[in-house]
Length: 367
Image (cartoon, rainbow, N blue to C red; front, side, top):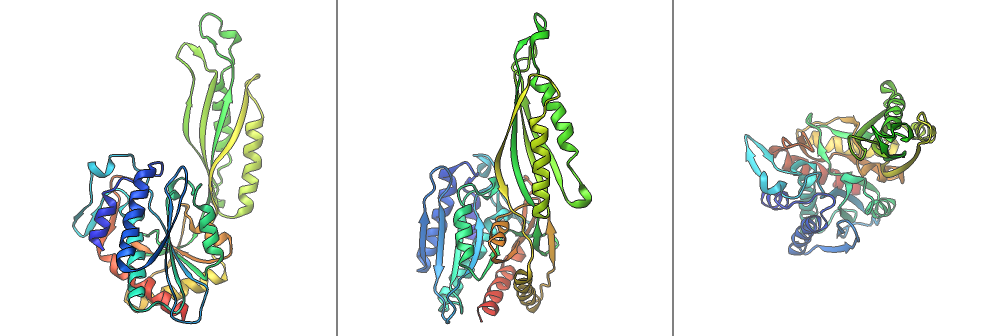
C-alpha cells in the first residue's frame, strides 16, 4: 500500500493538469490490470479522464457497492518535486497524501482482496474521478449515473483527525461576479469615470450580510481583482464568491438575495453579471444512509476502532451520490488532517484498519 501511495503522491495532479491527473489514473489502471481486474476509461476533454474498475459478485445480488474517490489535488505543478512523499513519526506527508490518494489506494486494495477471494456477495465498482477539487464539472454525470445504480457508496475522503467518518456535509456554490464601469484619467477627467471597484466594494459588504452562522449559512468573498492602473478610474472589477449551506432551501433563499445584490447598483452607471462556476450538493443522512453507516460502525467496532459520524462544512462528491438517493457514507478513507496545506498528513497506522472496516462493511452489506 505504501509503495503505491508513494508513487501516486509523487505525481503532480492539480485539477487543471490533465496530463498529471491522467498519469495517476493510469497508474491505478496498471495496478488493476496486474490484479486481473477489469477497468474502463471514460475520456474527458478538458479535465482528467474517469476510471472505473469492477469486481463481479459471488452471490445473487446484482446492485453494486460503489467505492468512490478523486485523484486531483489543489497543488500547483512542481509541488511533488518540492516536497515528495515521506514518512516521519508515523505520519506520511506529501501533496494529496490524505486528500485523497490514500483513500484511493485503500479502495484499490479492498477491490484486489475481494477479487482474489472470488468477490463479495454483491458486485463492487470503484470509480476514480479527476476534478472533485473544482466541483466535479467533468465527472458529476458519471458519479450520479454510478450512484443511481448502486446499493451503497463508500466515499474514501480522509477520515477525520478524530478517527470519525462524515455523515453530513454542507452544500457549496462557487460564483463569480463581474462589474463593469467606465475608465477615465483619475486626475484629468475623474468626474466622467464610473468606478467598478467602488461598486464591487458595496456589493461585498451587502453579500457578507448573507452569512448566518447559527443556521450554518456562510458567504465568503475569497477573491478580489480589478482596475487598470492606479491613476485610472477602474473600468472593471471581479470577485469570487463561496456560499455554503446545510439544507437545500437555504441555497434558494441565498441565491435570491445574491441575485438582487448583483442586479442593483449603488454607483450609478455600473453593470454587473453573476456566473455559477461550480457547485456541490449537501450530503444529507437519510434512513438508508444511517443503516449503512451503522453497518460500517459495527465493522469498525469489531476490529477495535470505534467511530462516530460527524458533520463537515467542507463539500465532497458524496453530496451528489446522496442527492440521487443512494445510501452514502463519506470519509471512510485513512485518517489524516490539514488538507490543502503544506502540512497535510496521513496517519500511516490507520491505512490497514480503515481498509478492513470497509471490507467488513461490504461483506455485511452484501450478505
